[in-house]
Length: 335
Image (cartoon, rainbow, N blue to C red; front, side):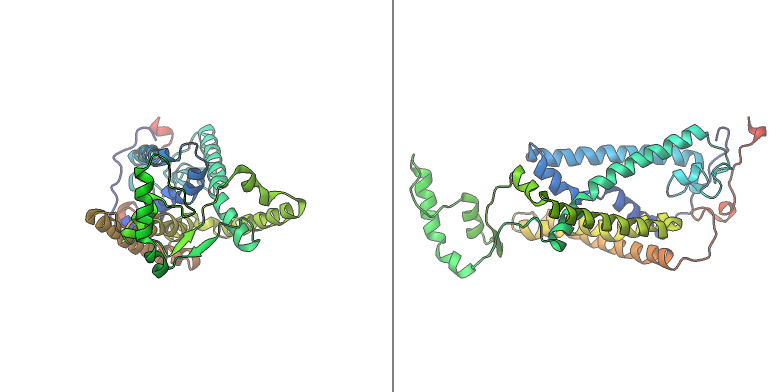
């Protein structure tokens, strides 16, 4: 698009800003894979730094792509920049922005997107596969969960404190069948004991691979995974003409719930007594804002996805002057 005039400015509205939430939630939503990465990481204590650096790198790439596209197309840029460089209805014709893109560049752009989708899909689908195998097939049986008895545990608090004190003061641990940890004592004395207690159990590589051994088990989980993939493919094919609405709807529902709301709610539930007033307030505000934005995007994206309108506006983010035709068409006179 060499030689184009000044780009048209967007007709910004609150609705347009809020509708970006679903797309961004999907783009940044990888919390579902963090527990698996944490479990497999050689140094789990470094995970927070890894997550922060990853988000910063991702944000840098997003900003670079957004600026590159906006400086050329302005408000006429599509929600997916690939749709702006080539027309899906006429791939060999003019792009929606009014220029003919280099075919090699278009092919490379779509190939890189295919690589990205392949890697992201295979990574993000592993936790759902694991959970489906556990719920449907009964695989991956977890450790025993014991209901916490508040009255019974409170009786032993003083005895546990005495045992812990003697353990710390002596050079040799006090021999007793009653094993106590400092963290558990602090939890008891400060009232942070969870209602459910999980019996400690070491997870080894052999145990992780045990459920997948045997021809019968292999046939069961392979069939289940294929069924899940088939369902996803069918949904993708049916919604292929509403891809951006599908992205917004998925980000506003599934990713907002699993990657924003639930982690914060669980964090508040577990660390409520440790958190400062500022952290509590910030977490509650984030939960409220994300829940409201997610519901808003879910409603509007759902309407467009399941009951699409007949609006054929090419560039809905622009002012009336630029909503139906490209602001710049590059032809032989522009060379």
